Length: 524
Image (cartoon, rainbow, N blue to C red; front, side, top):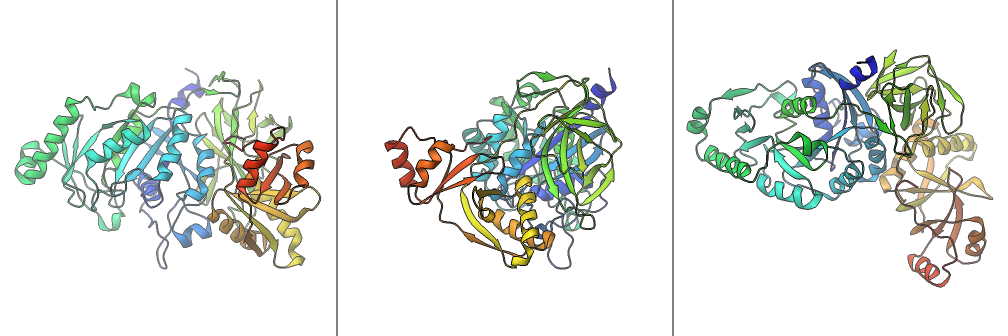
């Protein structure tokens, strides 16, 4: 077995997805705690006098207590190297989550037992399905009032089409949590709390006889539920899990650390290791091939003292060595990897080598863009990174015209990172840009970062546009003759038409079908 194949077998590269406030960032922190990567779990909400979560590094994240920018965290557990990609928790940043899911091999889906499947969870799961990603489900906040677990299992199967196979089953109702039954061993682990959830929760395993005597009717109900699950064949099955047909389900409370170890152990025992990745032509790239990787995220100014630009890459094959020269497929140009880092929240350390499944931050990557493929030896191009169709639009201008250079530099940087899409008038350039985004919060991040990182305070105001379509030069000439339509150019050079009225767009599509008006779908 080659070194690349062996090291790939030790990698577990996964992401955590959830609806906002379901407990995703809390679970991320607790994984680090249980793996010994941090000595004490940080508070998720960064209120005055409290620490922010390790994975949240941006000022706005700390103030609002939400994850805006996905981060990569690496730690060891049970002889495996985990690469955990924390994702934004707000729907307005779902496009960033889409990009992250292109770089992982499995997913942990966190559901709040009081809310179940929410619209954002469903939207993100559709991406998991499109990529055939195995999903582990964690029913969180069971120590608080919520819905019956059997009801949640039905909802998972009906709404996302995965067959739920509980690996642990709760004793007690939500809000009166007694512990969980391990359905493989039959052991009962009693629920215990830790002070503010800052330390690993003690795991008190007691006999079924003692549990029956002490837990009474709660135990009897749990046993009835387990018997029902056995009768319908709802047992954890590795083959159906890896083929994204079933999802192992765990119950616990991330805030109090209960149930966290069960999920970590399952990631080791069941989750797929880093395997061969398909290229853009759906041919697998051998793990033993020359080093290859693709850029799934670009982030600037993570280090305030250096103001640099990091391209996060997923290594797909071969052995990455710091200093090696990779070729960028898009440009054909060489890229030197002298400054390669491993990022832990806002902290970073030098990476000398990496293997398939690992995430490496390439510093000073000014020429790299999201979706770029890098390689040594045989050329390879990996599939494009999905993009979302914009749903909201705004205009932006610097409050101080003397800061226009900084404003323009910020436009270019934040466009390349995917914070927003910057649309420019072919005749006016940066003078009157339109910002396009999935949600309004992206505009807030845009304005905040322009001011903090580029010293270019700006005014961002809503634009009247309701729809956007791809078009071409010939159609653009006709569209310019019609009121309520503006022709702009996207950062990648493609022409788009912005419509102030959906009705006008529909009429044009009906009356002048020869015009090029292509919807912007995911991936375009």
